[in-house]
Image (tube, rainbow, N blue to C red; front, side, top):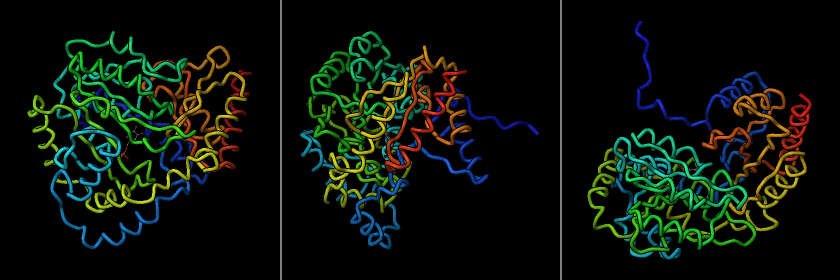
Length: 405
Ligand code: PLP
């Protein structure tokens, strides 16, 4: 029979967070082996539950939520997002500027699909959350990565951003707080990015899905709050701050000057209509979440579970010879560096594979985040302190063997 090939559109599309190493982990689990998973930010899977009021409201709303809604979403949760924008000082946002989605992911793909012609370029961070690189490629665009500098706590390198702008550059993606590095950007840097976008007429795509997962008393500024003119799409949702990723509830807010973007907005509206609407129970949960007690505060406080786990993972990892880590200020991840002089890794996917096979610990290799050198990996600090201790101990043992090879 004629082989059925994947479409040519997928030739440059890659999403390694759920890639071949995960397939191996699944096969091991099917054989009955227990794996410690430090690979994805699936918070509820680690016994860190969503706020009870969200769960209760989901249950209560379910019987009346079987129908489609308006494509952009129900009025009340969109209004709740408008209020949230007001709290974050994002000005000029009305209900009409808010789109609800099945998670932020759907809206990110939609926003890029509506924007890009073949060969259009989008500036993306390296390392990145790889959905962006994949979605730009799927939309026919060209991902162009700007460097985030580990020496400066993983801050975006403005000179590199400027150097990579061409007449084809359409947008810049800013992930703040950052996955995979845990960096949190100061206002001064955000203002510089706004200035670059203004000068070169770029759209800013701001991913702020971790904007309440902040440690050490830090606060977060939405980049959209720093200009009234630059067209900015801000993505957020319930997956992380409200530990509800399975409810698939996210939103996108369009802010800044819109009169010159009417055609693009028409495109966004058409794509929103084509997918009919986001799941209705998830939409209703947005209203409950934004209006309720913000229990994430308890988890990120110095005595809170997430903060203690971050501190422990940092302390244990930095004691391993040849491992260095920038301590995350926010989000759920760290991106440790393995000194290439001590660990001459050539293929970091193979490294992740061997760590899994030998020690039953699942991480994601740094190149999975479009980091070109095979000298980093991402670790999720969601397991409880006992499991984290166990996991980092296994990584340490694996690395000790690696050094002796
Ligand atoms: N954006 C970032 C930076 C993420 O880390 C993730 C998930 O890990 C998402 C978006 C996906 O969010 P959602 O579950 O709302 O689709």
